[in-house]
Image (cartoon, helix red, strand yellow):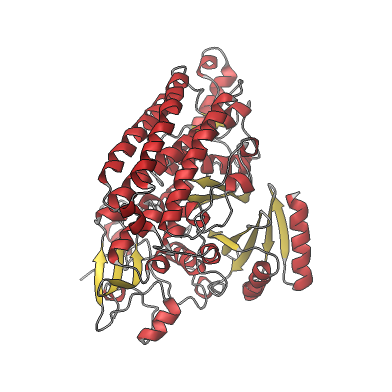
Length: 420
Length: 173
């Protein structure tokens, strides 16, 4: 009996020999071997970055097999969204990947816009790029902080959180919330950037490169860091594609695919940036990819800020975008639109679409099906963390338990996104 | 440009496997092709090996309650070399006899199919590893189906107490 079966696990698994099960399910089913030990790691393990439980089969200290056990954070977001209007459902997207709410918002908003057949304004696009790249930096800062903490480099954690705090303050300035922003809306953004945002952002762009250089001195050539990350958790480019890896996990293995470059959205084709690639596909390469991505993001933020076009931040379509407050006092039509939009919402046509964006963790896809009503008939999110988790057993097999912690950190999973 | 690319790909697919593509549909610049589930593995094999759709992005199920066939499963493919997306859609008449697993083509397929099984109850043929993933092991029903209520519990009054109590799923006697 496997541990999962003992808990009432799968009734569909027949009694097979150890070798048969290994050959067939390999990564999914841990086997209780006579000599091996089964270790339950999590769900309250600090280095699993959330409520992730790993059932690990150990031979001494070497990992023979492991199975992720998830579902401790099940929220039913997809089901709940089917019962909300398109606008109201958006607040739930923030809560999935709580380290990158802006990216989730963007994925969902772009999907709604695609389904409705509308676009946004040039200024809104630039604001979106700016904020999403800020979000990428902040998300990677948390990744770097916790990843380094897992491998016992304590001070990086404190530095990274200091800078992340500054970015969250910028978000609060823009949207009124540090996290859970819901700032992007179908057809544009909630409101224009406030005046005090500009100086604050410029200050950030001034001090951030020096801080990034600090992180580099702490880790890049640190012999302990190199020993803990080099040649650990290797995956080849071909395997990475087959396992559906995206984001830095895929690019660490040398596969050149960034959605911002390949199928640009929000005008990414007009920006000048590089896609950093790794060669070996180990923990160190994934670390390098993310750090280089942060440098690219800083450059993107600067570019977006410098060429920020003037103009409206919302499209002129009152069926989708609420009228400005100033009009409500004088225009009856505006009141009607306002009322209709917040009570009934807008109707999306029949049809289904899939929109993918490059979130900090990889391909964040949103599948939306409209049925002619004001509520989505089906919402589905292809969350990068969920897919990236699947190859964890492949990465971890044959390594030591201590390396497992480094490997989890390098895949950069967020459990809020894994559980639905 | 992408639509022309997709036209070529669809033509190549039809040439390789005549009669397999039941229907194609375009919506908002996305191409969907409909195939029967017995032809799925073959179609996907051609798409992956000959037409360079090397990345399986996502598997999504749709529930059209009161319609026949009730379920559809969509496979979102992406071609990293050609930078183009394609959706392959399969009707599922009986959720217990779902489409074949794509595990022979992509490692990730079993993992994505598990999610669909957990939330929709579609059993992918030959995927014996299907188990409850997000929900507790003893969970009843499949929450993303349209006939599954949204956390709603009927209120019991004195006149219909027994009637509603009989429907409630807890151990009795």
